[in-house]
Image 1: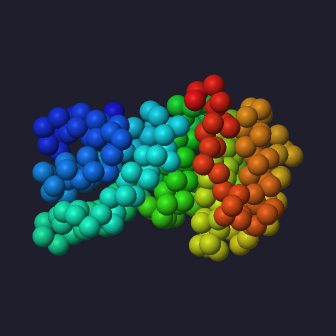
Image 2: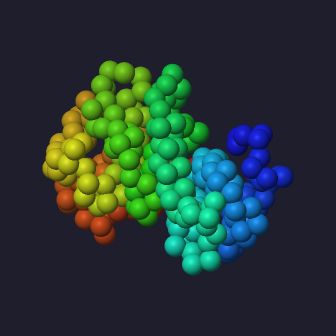
Amino acid sequence: MPSEDDSFPNSEEHFRSAFNQSDAPSELLKLLKEYPEYMVVVDLVVNYKWILKENPERAEELTRTVVALLDAPDAPVIDSETKISEIIRRRVAFLQTGCLEINDDTKDFGPTNDFLTGSLLSGFAFKYNLAQCSDQYGGILEGLDADPALANSEVLVTGACIQLLTAGSEIIQCSKSYFKSAKEVAAKLKAQKLAGAVKNEHALKLLELTILHAESGFKKENDMNNVWTILFPSQV
């Protein structure tokens, strides 16, 4: 849950209500205009993360809502000089450190796994140019190079697939410092499949689709928005 230290009275309640409206960007802008402060924008991003984690099937919708704020002509300027787009991008990138952290719970495969929902957030952040940072690429590398003998390998490989299948065409464009080509990614994913790192039938399907995407050179038309539906069909 978000911090109890709300950035304005009942901010969590107001942000959650705004994200649920049919014209969510306009409702969020109303709040930002009423409370044009740095910590309010930070609070918005934190609530975006938590709502996405609780409702991963809404990941694209929620991300598009946040992206709509970046270039809103009537968006307030914070402290007379900082655009909210700058704060939002920085804070979404900052989130990746915690969202893609590997810990003792990472091995617990399921729809509430923080690494998997973090990978989903990262994938859509890549897709809509909301954030692109080393932690996001690091999460992918953890999956590509995962040790199949470890208990968390299935989660790590699946997390990489979530990102790559969602936004492979964007990820590959600036990935040279992390992996050289789509061909290299395909080879590493095939090795994980051969080693039996992924056993869940839906995760295996996701892995196979990601291999095909990599083999195609990560063409934009092969990026997918429904990876969570494929991975956890019973949760949607």
